[in-house]
Image 1 (cartoon, protein in one colour):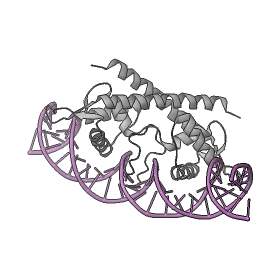
Image 2 (tube, helix red, strand yellow):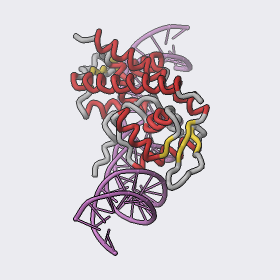
Image 3 (cartoon, chains in turn cyan, blue, green, purple):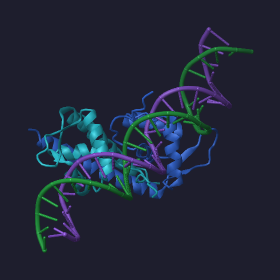
Image 4 (cartoon, helix red, strand yellow):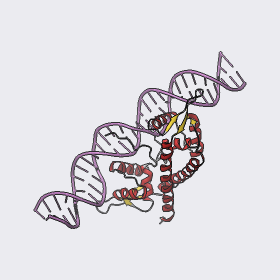
Length: 106
Length: 106
DNA sequence: CTGTCGTAGTACGTGAAACGATACTATACT
DNA sequence: AGTATAGTATCGTTTCACGTACTACGACAG
């Protein structure tokens, strides 16, 4: 088992989770499915729950009262603020980078 | 010191390096300065040179003959291809996420 | 001449976290 | 009952981000 950390990642798992929760509260399994289809990234359970509890400890998400055995999470205000900042930075970096790639071909 | 790994990063250092090299060959120190002004991220030497040698080992960058004390690096074709993929993914994730944030406010 | 500042890269230790594997429970179907 | 699926949790390994400290060299001030 040669865990190869996925060879130059483009986004932090925590950011994928926040992005998924931005659309509304979800429980863990739903987050996994959402990031798979919207970002093409599959989060393993180890990654998911570890990142979720870190986000909760830092106040970016909040656990909602679980109805049955699912535990939904909700993004908080500071989580939204953080996500907005990061997404803007990503967006501008991506467009600058793509512009560089187009022009700087020898 | 409590190495807090920077609290939800928005981009892998390796990606910042590739993005900087997309504008043309640079040596390490110049990459640091470039990412500082273009992305607002300061890469420490430990982060920078470790990431650079990983990128070189995987064939995404190539070391050019060093003139004096500096060691310039150049992005390779597969590095450009990788960067393009990742930037496109980042860009679409960022725009989807920002759209979600706008609409889904209770 | 010597201090120190900016440039450039090296070496290294520490801790955080990604990831896969594994295990477990509860419901649904057959 | 047996199997599949939904859902959550924990463990161990490995990798890597990051800070600190260090070497080295040119330029310029004092």
